[in-house]
Amino acid sequence: MAQTMTCKLLARAAGLPSVAPGDAVLARISLMTNLDGTTFIDAFVAQGLKVWDPTRMIFCFDHMFQPEWFPQQAGKEHPKIRAFARDQGIPAENVYDLGRNGISHHIPVEQGWALPGTVCIGADTQSSTMGAANCFALPALFGVDPIVLTGDIWMIVPQAIRVDLTGALPRGVNGKDVVYRLIRDLGDRVGGKVLEFAGPGVATLPIDVRLAIANGAVQIGALTIVFPCDDVLLDYLDGRAREPFAPVAADPDAPYAEVVQYDLATFDYLVAGPHEIELVRPLAALVGQPIDAANIGSCSSGRLSDLALAAEVLRGRRVAPGVRLVVTPISADTARDATAAGLTQIFLDAGAMVTQPGCGGCYSGNLSPLKLGDGERCISTSVETLRGRMGSQTSEVILGNAAVVAASAIEGRIADPTAYLARELEPVA
Image (cartoon, rainbow, N blue to C red):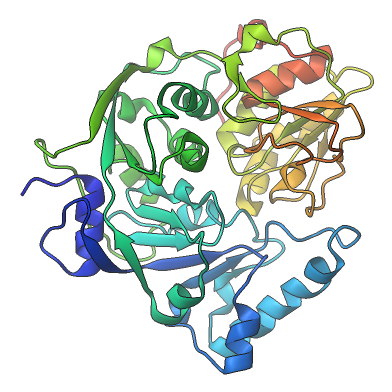
């Protein structure tokens, strides 16, 4: 029976030769990744429960850093996690504490935990990000307790839509723009299905861009997103993978609910919001709207390629008076790489504030100075445009890619970055 990547991943995890959409399976997971807003620790401690495999549990400190906003979580959550890890025998290296921290669904790929051919579960809604690594990555939206206890998850095998890519993205256009195009085109057709990417265009997408695309599954309406394993991914995993792995590939005649085709060369700058992620428009529709703040970071951006793109726009230029620009790397390793490449200095010279790694201004509990006041407008690379997400309920958050945000910060209004990218990009070390 011909199978999609989704079917092969779930069949392998369930110990079955094959599965079909609609089958119920009990899949064994390879990784449980947790943010620092845990919901299960108190119950486990109270009942004396043990996690199924301490070596396959990781915690990433990314949300809870702002005591004045969330005193219970920020003051107690990190010590609670450290103590729980010690008591459960979870290795110290599995706790991505300050200095090693980063977003809980980026760290597993960056640090070689999420591997091709596996099932990986995350406690964050954007955990589909890990699907860039040819794994079935799912957010545990209905609670992690039974998964953490048993290492298994019941699944109804979902249908899949194949997204065939040709061509290559234009310069300055990245994974954020791909997500917004898919929201606009497929949002009413996905209906909890899995998006599987295929075609020669995939090879033109760096891992950072694949991560950004996979991050958008929930916003698109997909259950998750799965990328194939190719030479680009294998090169990325070389030296990172923590154990041997066996990729999966869809059969040539695998049955899909739908096949859609895109030429990446036709993609352009898109923006989303305010307030509704489905409100996707061409950048040109909002060019000229004044802004008060600009934010580069969050789980949909903040990777080295995003920072390099923003730095190219900002190099030798200054943020407009009256505009607050905050840059938040997605992980500690990314922050170090950005500093080594000279990007951090470019941001500082431009008048931006560079903060500790994590969710940044996208989540109000984080240690970000960017809190929007009444009536303020922010252009942001973050994942959410919900009312009040970054501060006042009367503020607006417009979402765009890192080049758009950087150009807008320079001009003090939403701007097209094309002219700023006319010079040749310098390679990132």
